[in-house]
Length: 168
Image (cartoon, rainbow, N blue to C red; front, side, top):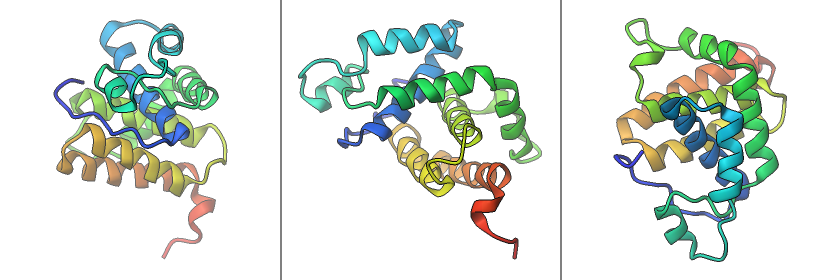
């Protein structure tokens, strides 16, 4: 993930949980360790990493302000519903794109978002989209963040259609 710049700390623990979830899913895919194993490593070593200045903590790969229950819920949903999440993501990629072709950070971000959208009705889908767009802007270039926006919007409409009202 070093090729991308890190999101700036915002003092928003739920956003921090999503940042940590994307990082953990990226690490899990990269190392082959289970999401559960990586989650425990993050909780022990990266989340709430002392009183370090927040920006310095982010530079070291830490997420000092992360809501641990949300982080754990996202990773658990991503691990237990990974095939379903991947199928949803694949269904909303352009015809010439495959999940494997995506940037690994983007893939982790979409998996976290899909897991969160599948895991209940809260928070509202629009909040989930906006939160993951904030994360995308921190890790990805503008073009890739726009691509993420389109896929996130399609995922949200497919997974939570009632929140968007009747189709026009």
